Image (cartoon, rainbow, N blue to C red):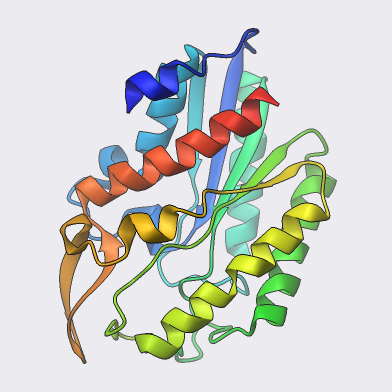
Length: 243
C-alpha cells in the first residue's frame, strides 16, 4: 500500500501539509488499544507523508457519538476543529485540508443528549447540516480543500446506546448521493472513495466485536480496519492535494 501511495509523489512540494479530521468515534479511534498511534487519522497522516516526503501534521477532532448536528458551526466541537486548523497553519504554514466523515450517528435513533442530538437525520437534514459545516470552513479558510468521505458499513444488528439496525444502515447509505451532490456545488470540495462501503461490508475481521442489544455487532474498525480506512482516506487526500 505504501508503495502505491509513494508513486503519487507530487512534482512540486509545499513545505507542509496540515490535515484536520472531523468525525465521530470511528475517526476518534474508539475500541483501539492506542488511539494516539492507531486511529485512522494518525495512520492516514503517516501514509500521506510517506507518499509525498512532505512534513504532514494531523489534528484529530473525532468525537464519539457526534452527528452532523453536533458539529454545526457554533458548537464546541466545530470550534475545536477550527482552532486545531488555525494552530496547524500558524505553526507550519503550507496546505490545509479537512477530511470529514460524518453520518454514522446521524443514521441511528439516539437519545437526545449533548453528544448525540440530531439522529436520525433525513437525507435533507444531513445535507443541510453538511452544507453549513462546509460553508463555514470555506469562509474561515478560503484556501483550504475539503474531502467529504463516505461513511462506512456497519453490521445490520448494531444496537448499543443508539439503535442502528437495518433501518439505520439503509438511512446511512441514503447519504451517499447527498455527498455526491454537495461536492458538485464547490470547487474546493471533493468526495471520498465510494468503495469504502464494500471494503468493510461483511468483513468482521476488520472490526472490533462488541456486545449489544441485538447480539455481537460490528461498528468500530479494529487496528487492521483502521489501517484500511486510513489508506482509503489517504488515496483521495493525495488526489486532492495534487490538484
